[in-house]
Image (cartoon, rainbow, N blue to C red; front, side):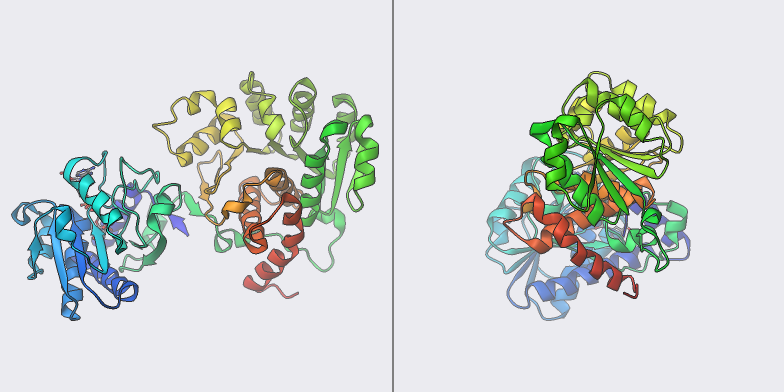
Length: 499
Ligand SMILES: NC(=O)C1=CN([C@@H]2O[C@H](COP(=O)(O)OP(=O)(O)OC[C@H]3O[C@@H](n4cnc5c(N)ncnc54)[C@H](OP(=O)(O)O)[C@@H]3O)[C@@H](O)[C@H]2O)[C@@H](O)CC1
Ligand SMILES: [K+]
């Protein structure tokens, strides 16, 4: 579940070899894993391997030789002259005794399967000229495509397509996935990604200390809150969700209900007087409390059982929301700031970041979508082209001292300490009105149960995606919280919790 950057993967490779391994043996196992995947993807028919000049191409030559030995009809087309290859790639090419075709789109013919071994981790610039024409021909071929390590053209760190990229049916990568397998558009180019063990010992990770993780339950299970049999509702915390005025109360109620479903012991909607009646009429298990001003809010928050606040959904943009957020941040409690609460600080982000930095035991989570991110972190958003979503989230977390969650189909959560997670389980139909309000409530619910901010946000993101996946198309935000009990039940089972 660790994700390795391209340089971390090079380091893993070097450490494995240093510990008595053999780099060519790694390439052989990589090539064999590709051949095995090719056999399942296309059990019959012709195969063309498109090879580049580096070790990705080397993997391709090994796969070609392995498949030919299994009786498959294989040809290789190589980007450069074989005599210009060096190192392991040159050695791998020598193992190939079958046909070597000219590097032209016509050489592809009409195979059942194309193995894309043009560029992998070594891609370092935009793809142009002959390789570009070849990638376009692969994509137009109609054949199944198996990508070696990464679809050629996809940047392993950012998931960006560098000019053009192969659309693979399946991708086989080695040892651990890279961020580019999860971040968009890389994930779409990969098709289904499988990880092959090529004999790199997992202990190399103790030296590398990866800080990027695939957001899956096996990674956060140690922080997943399971209420004890002798527990008390106050043991699971009390979340407060700030409501907007009379016309905008729905978002806060969505968040409050989600916080309760996510496991908070108690949830209160703090409501201005004009919205009190409408909030009270629409809520049952969630409590309602009149809070008009930041002074009222500060007095209410003196009760230290109120350990998590959610401010933003439907809160309204402006001074009142800003004051409420700063009030929440002035004490030792976890705070989720979403939507309007983020936009309310667009002109004075430093005021917000200073308040977070001075918060005792700071556990703040900011949950911007791309537009809100651009407003709050204008300096980072200005460098959009140079920075990946992962880098932007990390830099924003450093700058704001908060956990920063950038939403999307590849939601990234980053902690000020440098750790980050990437989720890939959100279905397209999760992009629906109010889904963000539910997410902020779920994070609040996890925080109320004293899950640390980075893990609270990551767990909520995964469960939110999973709930949407289970419900299926047609989902509206109201449905999400009601699917959560099923998601919990299965997580308990997966973690061996006795119900
Ligand atoms: N690490 C490991 O543990 C293991 C790694 N393994 C495998 O090695 C792969 C990495 O190999 P790699 O480093 O040789 O780079 P690779 O992706 O083959 O690129 C080759 C060359 O392409 C060039 N080039 C770059 N961009 C370009 C562009 N836009 N347009 C045109 N040319 C461009 C550039 O050369 P240049 O032209 O700059 O001289 C670059 O050096 C990895 O993905 C995996 O498959 C496995 O064997 C098992 C163990
Ligand atoms: K490739």
